[in-house]
Length: 267
Image 1 (spheres, rainbow, N blue to C red):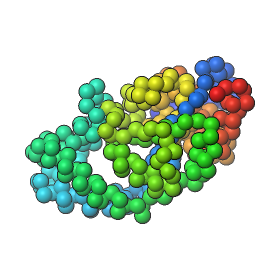
Image 2 (image 1 turned 180 degrees about the vertical axis):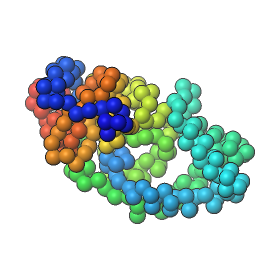
Image 3 (image 1 turned 90 degrees about the horizontal axis):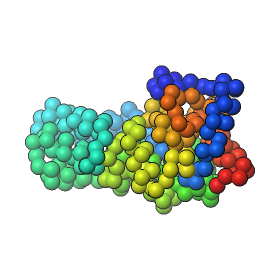
Image 4 (image 1 turned 180 degrees about the horizontal axis):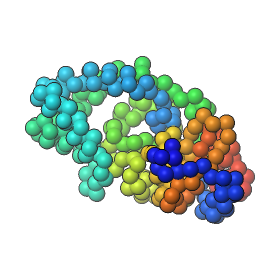
């Protein structure tokens, strides 16, 4: 974890200094919840193989196997850089169209039909993350919940995966997806865009996720971050350039942290 985003665990003395430094800035009113690995898990290798087996043959109708693989790679590479003008969905579709030599409209129809047909068949590879449902059942009574998933999928696919976590999509007042976002994690622009869309300041939120590489950078734009781990002890994390605190621990730890936040007279 430390190597991925230049983080390290804070010593007890350093932890106290960090907490004091950010204490007055914490006015948490909303929770940003990551999805994959935080609320729903997946058997990564099997789901990837199953998805490719189902979709690549259909993509091949528009070109060779090499063309198809290049198109998938082009879509991935396109989303590595934020855009000020076009949503993630538009950019990925355009990259696919250009790689396959077809029109944008034809590419959009093809990708939509392919995902709608095949993605629901992958359910057996997904499972609820233990403790997530119980935590959200508690948290929803205290905070509005915003789903801050990496926006590479359309809204209907995001909602499908929420249901595979045994959760109701209506738990969330809003969610990020490829048709409304212009950047992906771990870009700072992704986190800034959430704040702009929701009308929130960084200190009003806490991001709860599981991926240090994708989720911890939120602390660089002033959003407090909690990274879920299997540790029995909650730890404070130090991130170079952070402007908000970051912790690591379990769902029980983050609930305890938020309860402490309430007891100290904050929202």
